[in-house]
Image (tube, rainbow, N blue to C red; front, side, top):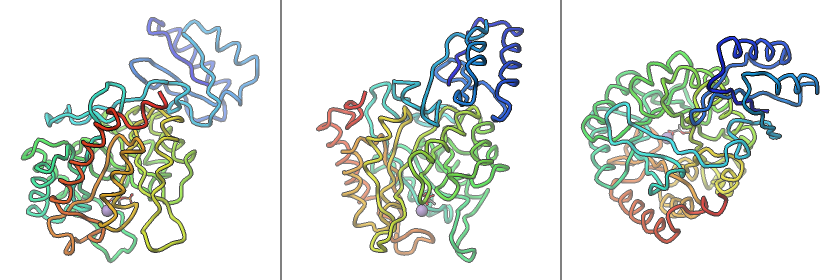
Length: 359
Ligand code: PEP
Ligand code: MN
């Protein structure tokens, strides 16, 4: 159930509503309003309310309307918000802002590219220049790296964030970087234009809540968990939105399967499916999905044909010497080809790929 609060409601009326909600939703998380498209809303699991509580809620003077959403996720559901969300990136930092998502009819998809990890100043600035020249709009680079082994390169940390800010200054591109722990959300948000929550943390609930509460309005790109179902993924996104940050972008990055030939299996059917289930934009990461650079161009084309609103790609000036994920990294020149094909496909598909089919 989603309750919309009247913008004209007095503070007494609002307090009365919140007190009633506190009484009838004993076992649900603390109820706090979230703003979506300028409208203040509160989501809760209506199936846990008895009929009398439902009637009382509808009669509250602060309530404008009550929408029943049957799926376990509420605020991210298409049945609540039928228009696709478009998310503005980079406006606060003075970089060249871009919109990810489909509501405004702007050309998509957005191309995000850069190294897996920020390794040093020269490597980052060289890559930033190359991806800019190739036509990418957002620069990626990990400063805090979630590595499988504790003996692998863990990222430059704060120094990596400073280098990303320098690369943004130099190229004008907004930057995205990963945050791994709740206590660092505010720090990463000071430097980044988009906060990335990685696959291994998709169900790190304290991190999701912190990204909802403390990201200072920065959008969050939520990568699909290593073996996450679509519902688990959407519920993870719901945590961020319900905690106060409606700007979530979903990123399909492949899921675990049995065949070691590819690093993961790229689940492209999730793109049109997500467009039916949610209003959040969906982007695809062919680098982590395949783990093999030779597969990245074809999977990039396929992702756009499936309706992805963006791609995130790993690029390195010398992929074979990368400290992280070199096997799946492409060069700036290869990125140029992918961007060219993406633009051609976009024209062929009439701008929005499959998005227009599900609207
Ligand atoms: C990454 O983007 O470098 C990364 C670690 O991705 P994932 O969380 O999808 O493995
Ligand atoms: Mn990587």
